[in-house]
Image 1: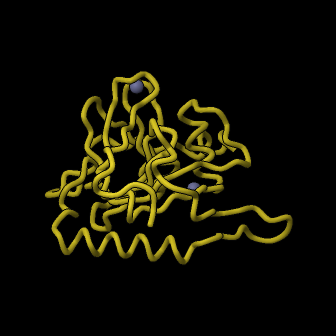
Image 2: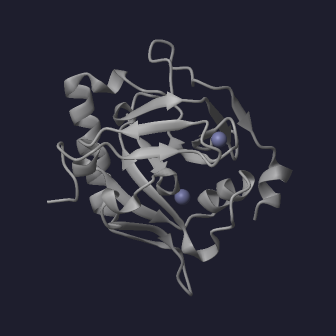
Image 3: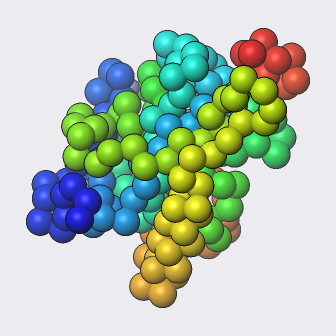
Length: 193
Ligand SMILES: [Zn+2]
Ligand SMILES: [Zn+2]
């Protein structure tokens, strides 16, 4: 059993200034995957949004489906590190990173920034480490099979239940994101390391 469950209180999220607030459905605690991502893009996104440089520590994320997130106050902003990059969402007020999604709502997926949660322990232990650097050769993923299985299982359940149509990140009818995407130019991306 994971931490939490349907009877657990809803985990709460907030931006740095408090104008953006959201809650997570406690049902997300059972099926979600917590991971640390060490990829260069996640680090660059943190720096772009004015957060402390995570350096080699990576970025703590909680993967679930977008229907589990209910925004209670504030607006989202959106940027991409390159034209085909992930959708990276932040609080429009103060720029606090919220998470990332794919560029389409068709695969219901979101990786939420654990830093936004008031109680990260409720999200359970880290199960996956992505893009872990090695002294030589390409980075490795630890627990990637579990991560992929989690994404597929959650997406299937969301489709079967119809919950995949509920998302704060997109207009489900048109597929348009709920905020205009700012795309960084090459020089801006390069400057982020
Ligand atoms: Zn990453
Ligand atoms: Zn804010």
